[in-house]
Image (cartoon, rainbow, N blue to C red; front, side, top):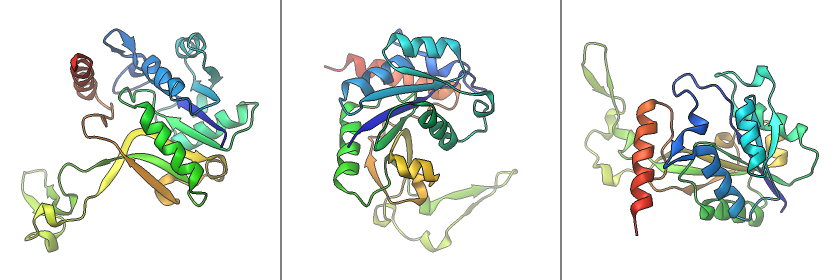
Length: 228
């Protein structure tokens, strides 16, 4: 199975300005992700889609293929799917599968990508393989809270069920989505398709959406670098 990676890394970020080039122990997030993607040996080509000249230059310096993203696909409301589709159309090669890798997924490891690629190549009925994270607390026992602070149970049927007796549930780990080209082009979302998940450990699945997330991710990254 011939696979390529597409890293969507636009220049703008409302909540965390410049987060795709944020430094982790002196190294930009995008560079860390690009290195892991390349060293995995899974992909024949690595594309970086961006509207930002600095990011596109960084991609060139690391051997990735830059794809200039048009303005209408570079705002903060555009979903990932049309961005991947645009990069696929701009690319001149042919592939069987595309792995979208989040540019701030600094904890992604080669084994994640290798495992996802193996699943997709050996199970032809699959459309996608994605990274998933287990909910830390059972969402079946979720509470809602009114503006004045009153709480209530969303699922009253689970009030007397111990958390350990509830089936584990998962959410997107914010790392990667490895799918067949046909599925990307059809526009089928991985959550609604024939999809398998690769579970990512809690401390590695840090989705950077706020400045607090960034500082926490930097602290964990530094901690991991100190581990023997």
